[in-house]
Image (cartoon, rainbow, N blue to C red; front, top):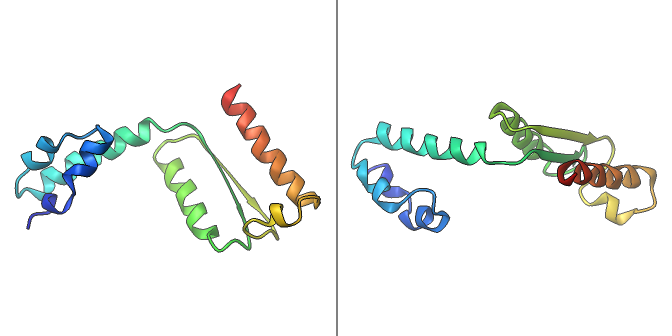
Length: 117
């Protein structure tokens, strides 16, 4: 089975960005398939809107969230990363009146205002 055969053509048809006939056009040529997929991924990244990523230092997903934001930045996506010291995942919902929770919520709201004008 070739590299490209492991990619489900229905996935590409579903997102209507990469017709199935292009998937099969590479045959058993992994470099060509890789170049085609990299081009697709770059087109998808280029279409991304600016991102606002906020994560707490005690969040189980902290490292993944920071890595995601850094990859967006490296790809040229305008990204704002905010790391909240001492907070945990969902903490703003558990203690909504705490100062840190209110600052987090204001951060979300400000990001939305900037995004939608």
